[in-house]
Image (cartoon, rainbow, N blue to C red; front, side, top):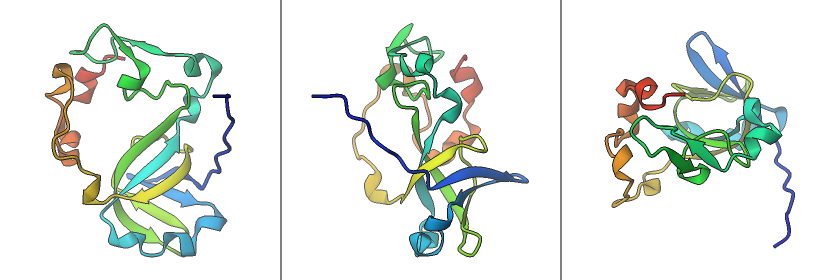
Length: 160
């Protein structure tokens, strides 16, 4: 297999207004592209970790003790680290409202920094759930449901 270069097109950026995050869509993706999205409670937001888009971060293949209760070394593909060959992140975010005129999707929370490029949005649907998913012993104490993540002590869990 040859190395292939892909072109991603930014569809918007993460912005912050008071305590509310939102995606500011580029003019092409305002209006028609957002139609009916307001009827979904959550959306998958695919965004680019632009602060970590360096040759050094893209070269990382193994992470040193990324989780307090995890192994000393973990392969990058077994982590949720933003330091990876392609710094792509996926976040499930609660949709608060859609402002069609301004081309904004307001979110209750997203773990992306203001200015982060957004490359795609897909509606979350319960069919995205997996009935019998399994995880390693060292992360079984993590929240089982998205809503429980807000009260979980992630600072104690991720030492970096």
